[in-house]
Image (cartoon, rainbow, N blue to C red; front, side, top):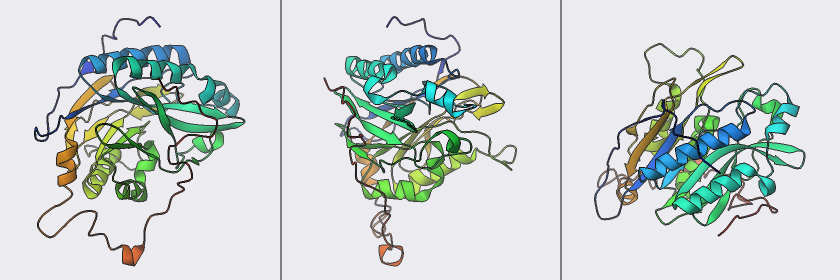
Amino acid sequence: MSLPSSPSNLSLDVDHTAGDSELPDTLVACVQMEPRLGQRAQNLEESMVTIEMAAARGASVIVLPELVSSGYAFKSRSEAFAAAEPVSDSVSLRAWSEAASRLGVHLVAGFAEREGERLYNSAAIMSPRGLLGLYRKLHLWGDEQLFFEPGNLGLPVFDTDFGRIAAVICYDGWFPEVYRRLSEQHVDLVCMPTNWVPMPQQPAGMPAMANTLAMAAAHSNAMAIACANRVGVERGQAFIGQSLIVNADGWPLAGPASIDRPELLLARINIAQARRGRQLNAFNHLLRDRRADLFGACSFNEAAPRGLPAAAPSFER
C-alpha cells in the first residue's frame, strides 16, 4: 500500500545502549499511537508508517499496541465482531507480514481475532519468514469479557536468531505466574501489546502501576519486557500511554513515554548479558533458587506450543 507521510506529532525517544559487544545488540522498538475505533484501514495505514519509521532507525523487533487495528471500546459484541479479522483472511496480518519480510524485522501487533463465532484479543508474532504464531490474551479486563473468549493457546514461545521471545497482553502482566512460566521456558524478551488505563486509587505523582509491575517482573525473572501502550480517549475511556522498555535487570532502557502523545521508543538489549545477569552473585541464581519443592511448577496449557490454531496460515516466504 502507499504510505502517508509520517505524522508530525510522532516523536522519537533517544536510543539507549546496554550490554557488551560480544554479540550484536537487539534494537527493540515500542510504538505508542492512537488507534481510531472501528477505523481499520486508517489504523493499519498508520501502523505501517510507524513500522517503517522504526525499521529505518534500525529496529529488529517492533511492538505495536493491543487491538491496534480496531480500537478498544466496543459497545456491543456485534461491533466487536465486525471489527475482528479471521487469521486466514486478515488484511492486517498480511500487510504486517509483508512489512516484516520486506524490512527484515520481527513484529508483534495486537488485533481482534475471529475464529468461527468466537472472538479473541490476540497478538500476531511475525518474522521475516512469515507468521510465527499467535498469542490469545489469557486474562480479560472489564468489558472485554462481554466480547472475547479467554485465550486457549497457553503461553507459546518462539525461537528467533537473536533469542527466545513471547507475547503477553496488558492485564496478563498483573499475574506473576505468567512471567514465571515464561522464565521457566528461558524466554529472553517478552513483547507486550497493551491498552493500559488509569488504575483505581493511583496516587498522584507515583509511577503507573503497570510500569512498576513490568519492572518487577523483568527483575525477578531476568528477562527484558517491551510494553507498547496507546494514548487517547474512546467513549470516555482514557488510556495512559507511558510505554516502556525494561532490561533484564528491571531498569528502564527507554520510557516511560508521555501520557498523551504518540511516540516511538527505541532501546538496545544485549541477550547474552541478560542471560549472564540471572546469576546475581556467587551463590544466587534467579531461576535456580526458586523453591519448587514448596510451591511446585507453574502449569499452563501447552497444547499449541507454536501458538497457531490448526487452520491458521503461516504466511511463510
